[in-house]
Length: 112
Image 1 (cartoon, rainbow, N blue to C red):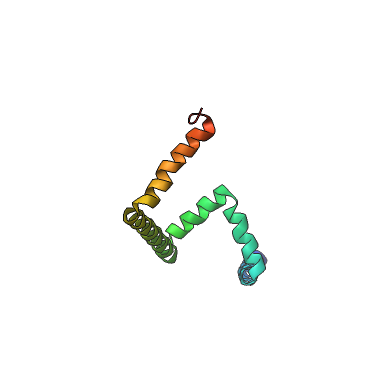
Image 2 (cartoon, rainbow, N blue to C red):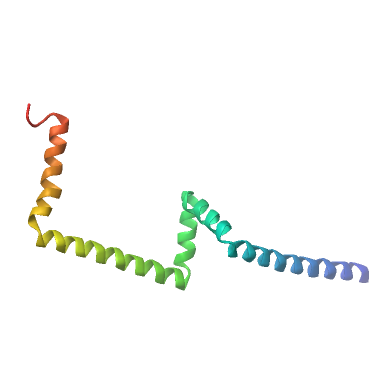
């Protein structure tokens, strides 16, 4: 019985030591710029992993702050573009009117 307890304790200590080693190996891999970029590209190019990373970021204080800042930046860009179009009606006309005319012309609806 004592031998079983000693063996169980030894296995538990080895497992604990092995788990600590894998964490440091993971951190070492992530500290390498090339490896980190490969991992990020793999996540970005896989829809399931992308959803998982967004979920992880939403559960993280830092991740939420980053996403909120990005959303504010997007809203600011949209607002400034709308103001620019409001200030320049000709530009708005070119963006909206000409596209419809060009589409109609390409489809054969104008000029035939």
